[in-house]
Image (cartoon, rainbow, N blue to C red; front, top):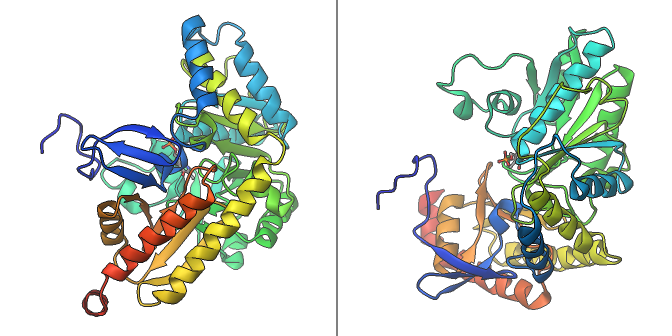
Length: 397
Ligand SMILES: *Cc1c(COP(=O)(O)O)cnc(C)c1O
């Protein structure tokens, strides 16, 4: 089917018309269990009543004013993020890439106002994904996203994930920061062990570097803590979030310490839409749910159940599933069969999954997934795995 939309995505021929909780309904009336949540975006499921009410009420009052005026919902959301984190200050954006751009600019400006404008380089890690703007494709370093788009934005040096010697060798007098996802998402659901995050913090301190974390996918409750880095007990300097914080409404943010953000003074950065009343009202509604007492503990409990079922699945289909990985409700199945094929067959079984790098399929269900939905997910995945007959597995290997 042809479409007037720029063909940069291979889209499945399914048209979803409505959603409720973990369930999506297609135009033909078929119901699908959504284990992808729009790539970790619908953090509280579809049409969560509290989010719908907050959005509808705000829509009746005021959609947008510019950042030339005070926006109470934005100030409130920023204060709540500050109160719940390492940060002193927040800059709102509409997307993850813009939150990363803000983080990169803030890090460079920090060193510039400290008298070291030469310290603009940032070390990133292989398998990273930080967005699709010119700077963030350079930060992510993946050739397939850089090809044909002209000179790579300067200032990013990439080292292999977990190679400490390479990291030490990459730090030069021009290095100003380290940037890493506490759990790599697009790269294949690869968590950075907490001890390694602590070691990165130490290396940053020893070398006068800022530690930037990309929590666009792993933040906002996804791992069972508000921020994934909390599992390591570290204090980063700057964190980018997006995806889950808007619950489906485009919203991102850069969180920073006052020290890291000291160069970001009047007029140094801006955005037309970022932090507008509609977006930040929804962001507050998302936090109402996620920060309610016991919610994140429930996420941890649900994550434990789902992970246990996935481990069972791996045990019963060792020729299809090689490994279960991830943190909280950010889980991946590393496959022995092509992940794209697995995702396609899952859709035929009315399960929505998302492929990731390293031949992984991702499960990023709404944080509200219940035991029945976990059981449905297990049965569906079991059927999908079983559909790969021994013969297919042998052929595809
Ligand atoms: C999705 C993602 C981004 C980019 O976010 P956009 O909203 O698509 O710009 C950046 N970093 C990570 C880790 C992501 O998962």
